[in-house]
Image 1: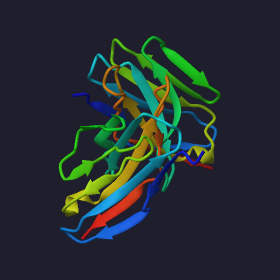
Image 2: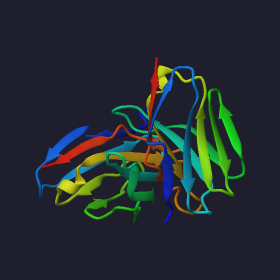
Image 3: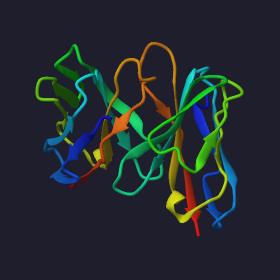
Length: 113
Length: 112
């Protein structure tokens, strides 16, 4: 089955700096790559996603890049703010699998003042 | 829309007890999922359903059962609770043409 590795497990940045989280996957059939943000005591919430026919997608301060050849994708957060502090999960799924998601192990992002 | 709701929020069980975790969605989604989240391990899929009357196993189904008698409800049953089932359980649903899964707030279960 699919295996998703996520790095780093923890990340501390100063407010205003950029943060980058990387994921690699094993299944070449994966074609959907979402990123979820999980705040303390809450369920994961989708913040951005990308499909395999696109190499990059941006939404305000958040961007995701995908390299299908190398089987890795990354989340980029610019101009970080304290409210960005949370746990971030990458995930993958493929067509025909009932959209079942395989998650990475998460990155705890701490934005310090 | 309330989205995906889960009850209870917290529960402590003794070894061998049984319980049902409730999940309801009001978005008329066909797809529903149960995940467990252990510390530092991400989310693992327990069971999923592609529509009323249809369920299938995920990655970690042992010790659990599900049913899907209606589009809205997807309860998860633990028959003989074990300490290894101590975890946070999330229900999710998906519908329409987009792949976004909407998650509930979770149930924190402790088995002692």
